[in-house]
Image (cartoon, rainbow, N blue to C red; front, side, top):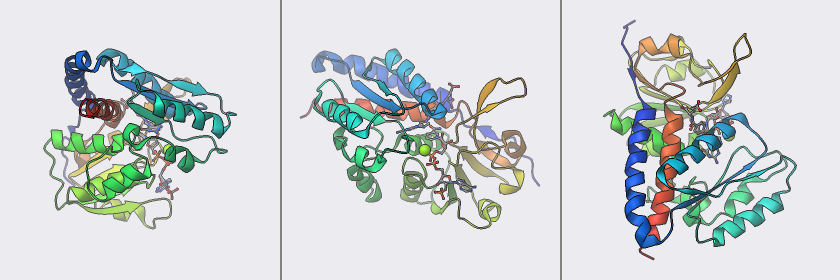
Length: 292
Ligand SMILES: NC(=O)C1=CN([C@@H]2O[C@H](COP(=O)(O)OP(=O)(O)OC[C@H]3O[C@@H](n4cnc5c(N)ncnc54)[C@H](OP(=O)(O)O)[C@@H]3O)[C@@H](O)[C@H]2O)C=CC1
Ligand SMILES: Nc1nc(=O)c2c([nH]1)NC[C@@H]1CN(c3ccc(C(=O)N[C@@H](CCC(=O)O)C(=O)O)cc3)C=[N+]21
Ligand SMILES: [Mg+2]
């Protein structure tokens, strides 16, 4: 067993650089546009990972000059009520981006709700139009978390072409678009999920391992190929013995980092990159209106 000092892939600093660039861009565009960019975030109920995201988005929007049009609904809200709000936001010229926080409560049909978002305002890249564009490698709005992973890999000069990548998780939000983006970058990609047999054997073949499962300490040292690049998308809130809450990813970080060549921390890894790419998508959609 070799012992590397894993490089920490610092998503927080990379995200700050992206946000500074976006801030300057907004300052230069807004006189011509006559308004700031606008982002609407809709949240139904109170999932803890969603709450972290909403809080960080609002802070960042304030900091770089994006107007927030957030709405929170209680868990019992009828889908029709949220669908009406989406329709109004589609028509609202001050709004460039609309994002519906996932997961939605069980009585919601997420697919039909997401169909209702104007694809040009779909800054989460979840509308079938944008998903289709991704499948075809066309430009379009792309899911922020996997896009953030690709930016971070690029920032650190990590080679993807020809490498074996294993993606744990197959959600429409993270796992599926992640696999497609790695494939587009010429990795050889395997997707794994709760029905995958012999998971540790599979992950030990990964040069690049991405976990988007949502289970603390899910991945231990014996799951890692020596020298792997390990990307932790998981955001889990756990409580220590004194009852204090903290955020952790899917990795047993201390156990696996000695075997990795590079690794993302939680917090400070993919979470801030997701926020940065969301702001980037919002500014892209805003900028497009100059030309139309
Ligand atoms: N850092 C960030 O910016 C973001 C973080 N997240 C976090 O990432 C995690 C995943 O999010 P999301 O994709 O929305 O979650 P989902 O719950 O939609 O998907 C979880 C995936 O993990 C798979 N899975 C569950 N248990 C196992 C297991 N024992 N072995 C292998 N695979 C398993 C599931 O498989 P199956 O399909 O078979 O059920 C599913 O595909 C969460 O912690 C979430 O909070 C999410 C978005 C952004
Ligand atoms: N439609 C939709 N799109 C999403 O992208 C989406 C979602 N729903 N639902 C919830 C998950 C979760 N998610 C996070 C994004 C950033 C942080 C984040 O900023 N994390 C900081 C936390 C810092 C802290 O506050 O401690 C970090 O990891 O460093 C966390 C979680 C996006 N998600
Ligand atoms: Mg989810």
